[in-house]
Image (cartoon, rainbow, N blue to C red):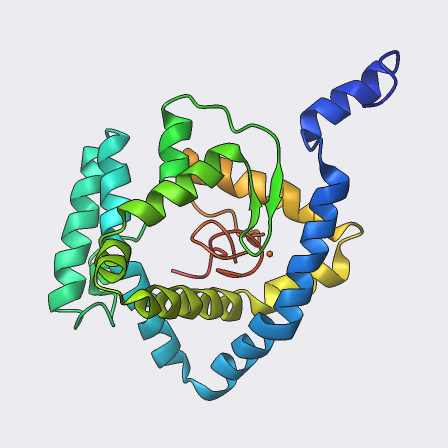
Length: 248
């Protein structure tokens, strides 16, 4: 905490809301090392050997498989029109789109949107709490960390895999999403890391902006997600978040 007599510094400290910053920065550096050792090289191979059409197909399938989580949180937030869109997208893309390889629903005007339990808690009025940098998963906060756990436990694919001793399915799906998101955000992440005076602070700011945008059902801002695993983070895509605006 800054000197209480310095009201401007105290206000800035409270706005940043990152009381564990020294530890969070150390975890951030750890995540960057993992990214450079594993995820970045994998993303380079993915970009180099898989044609763009196949990359889009993989991304579309992953989004299609996430439908149950998005649908559940649409309903929990009382967004029934969006829930209808989510359900319609699933049926269109699973049939005409050949199991989700092609996003035919988007071509029909039904764009993909993400919902997760962290967003649901926000809609219900739960405060986000202090900023967190989770190992591997990247930028978060207590509300989104709880949401990440709930999404994992309620995902039908995870439930089926864990109940049938097919945990490798979960790992394969998670790893594929991580590589896909990292590849889609490859150039933006490189540019951000190169131009940011304080990469950690930039990621923290962008993470909060993106989450606020998602909670308010706004369009993607075009800013990079921030380094992590999970739907709320690029390790999916390393930097703690969903994807940038060009990734549909």
